[in-house]
Length: 162
Image (cartoon, rainbow, N blue to C red; front, top):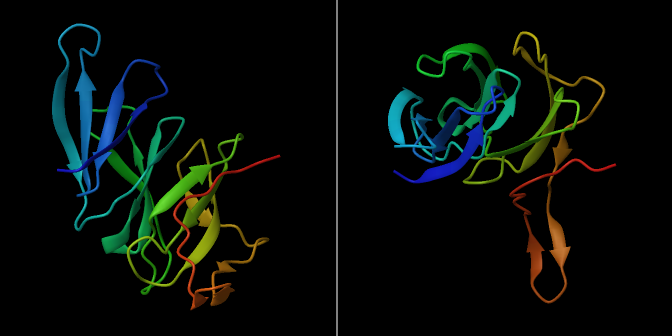
């Protein structure tokens, strides 16, 4: 249910997509007779837009309060290689990677929890996830919106720029 955006893997021909109900699927024979196979799942819902870093599918898993890296070098049998818990009240939702494929920005305000943004690191050789100790967490506290009043922003996406 609720399929998300497809991603092409590092081999340039394998396509995978996740669902917002936290299922992961592989699409085979894309050019001739496409077939969709279920290959992995996490508990809960609202697993959002993933990023692919080399052979790693990196995904937000709100139920686990974590960002998880799966090795998809064998797309039929993904293996979890790293899990980074952000905190008990965090529900990671949206993510983007930088050009180098070593930094990720993750927001936690999509479907509840605290509204924060984190800059994470990923080791593209091992898939290991870590917090970036040189960058503070961006707290999205109360802001005044003219004509509306005080509101808590809920970031729903992020990009890296020059």
